[in-house]
Amino acid sequence: MPTQESGQRPVTELDARYSSALTPRPGAAEVTATDWATARRMLAAAEIFQLSTVRPDGRLHVTPVIAAWHDGRLYFSTGPSEQKARNLAHDGHCALTTGGNALTEGLDLVVEGTAEHVSEPAVLEEVITAYEDKYGAHITSAEGTFHGIGDAIRKGAALVFGVAPSTAYGFGRDDGVYSHTRWSF
Image 1 (cartoon, rainbow, N blue to C red):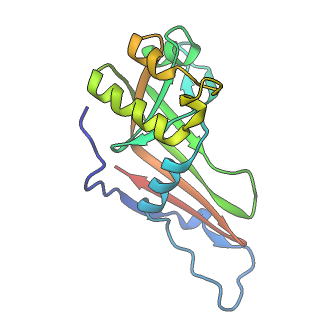
Image 2 (spheres, one colour):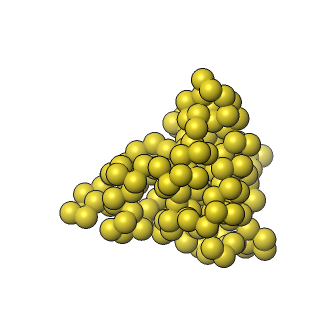
């Protein structure tokens, strides 16, 4: 799987139609696009994502997943018979969404791309390490929520998918200042 991380420089655009200050204040900061480095750091730190896939009959399926940002991709796992795995086998297009639920602060991120099934043992080990580094005791502790996921991945009982962004969006809110950024890869 080729990587995008090193030198990854998407085209960044601010969509002024959805970027504004609710009440312009003297001395308020100018609305600017969110830089990709900030978005990438937030993707790496986010613990929960909403994965949107499309069923073969065209209906949407949305479910929370854990995901790790590694080498220019978001990686997540699922059981081979789960709905999301069946959907992705039919159509790899998907979106991963993360952020907050406050109206006046935060940055919501949406990553659109095509999920690719990962089967190369070396990449799987890198993803397992990325999961363990990010989620710690949730994965490494016998009492952890996702304990044993590394072994499940190694045995094929959990499938891993990687999504390189084709387009991503950032919806920023900071003290009444709203920004809508689009990154094209």
